[in-house]
Amino acid sequence: MKTKFVLLTAAMVLIVAFAAPALARSKGSRIEVRYVVPKNPTHQPIYERLKEQGVLERLQEFLSPFRLPRTLRVSLMGCDGEADASYLDDAITICYEYIDELWKRMPAETTAAGIMPIDTVVGPFFDTSLHEFAHALFDMLDMPVLGREEDAADQVAAYIYLQLGSAQARRLITGTAYAYIAESGAAPLSLKQFADDHGPPAQRAYNLLCIAYGADSTLFGDFVTKGYLPKKRAEGCNNEYGQVADAFETLISPHIDTARAKKVLDRSWLPEPSTRVQRRPGSVPPGAQQ
Image (cartoon, rainbow, N blue to C red; front, side, top):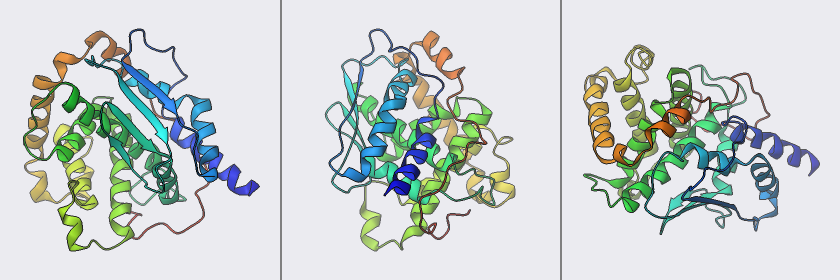
């Protein structure tokens, strides 16, 4: 039990380290955060470490440039075994089970594609938080969405962190893509899963690689040369990114405090690449070493 506690605590360092030292709460912020004591005792170390490090307060600071019309509540809590995150009625919920699942899938070493273990946790955690925040924006700003809302939320999340600068964007994109590929290889898809409002994990991975390549074909050029993104798909990625950028600038940018946004984008939000922790015991899902 002691060993498990130590490993859990170490894993939490991965997740909370994406931010620089904690800042004071933004004045007039319409984002409220809370840490709900977990029902499952195995999640207690996760709860304690995240709360101690102020991970939600840091997410609150990252999102502070967005001018929301009403209060948004963001909670970390147990979800009765569901490894998930969601948005509903002005509230984002991120489940302890989801964080635990990311840790289980973390590779022991840097992958053949050069993805560092720490980024396979921080990337998808960051991406999922922004994905649910995108749902909040669509709802609170009464924003029109053409197409599936889940796809649009993926695009908004990726667009936001692609603005962070080449080094951080690269790590977030590759870490998140790893998580999707790991999820897609965990179990074969049934026909019924294609009816889900979310796209299949592998499809979401390719969409993410495409929007990144469309944003910067030099920074992400190896996605194509190494075969991670098919050349045929890559031909239209510049247009795909352009569509997202135009929609974001038209619909969302008017609700952003540009001066505050510049301060956020100028900061480093990720841990040092050399950060190392132990992976939770268990095998890495098939396909996860891409």
